[in-house]
Length: 290
Image (cartoon, rainbow, N blue to C red; front, side, top):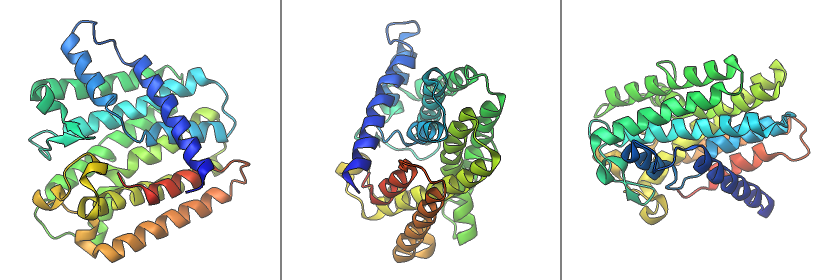
């Protein structure tokens, strides 16, 4: 990936980290344990892909008010973190490590993990509502709900230990992971007031990188470096999860991820932006090791 792309993504990640710290409740505020738990998971690190996508979309299409986009972008990371906290619970994937440290229910306890996830979900909507855009709030709600992330999660649970078709695995990935990534791109553009034609193209871009992201996640669970991933490799196989490589094979999984990202980049070129950071983000997804 070109140096300029790395510089942009790292700069944005650092900005998001500072904002997340700002919008989270202080750990000395009552109830301290709950606030400490929220901060533990959110500030443990991460790619910050979803808020970066939202801010990139907002700025690329003329948005200039940081007081609108900054809390909105952070709301997406709070939702993402809440989903990971709940996904790691014993009743779901039962994972011990996340980002190289103990998962929240291991560090605290299961009850605190459930409540911390719920609290981040609440904080996300509180922040996004401050944008004054009912459409943006509805966009996030749709991405999380039964026709989005939660629907994908349910399909994922139901598919455990079963042979699934390519259509089924694409549904799981497009909803469990892709829906929030698509919403991140759309929410930034909605808040910037872009036209419907741009929004439609951004939607397709978001869907393609969202599916590619999860395909690569599945690939890394097979052939990734545990130290770089910050979590155990092979957990999907151990838990008998439905995965893209498990359905079509590793070679085809690599091929499909590359094709999706190439198509996303082609869409981003059509916007004619002076600085095409959508292209940079797609390339980053294709080259990530964690």
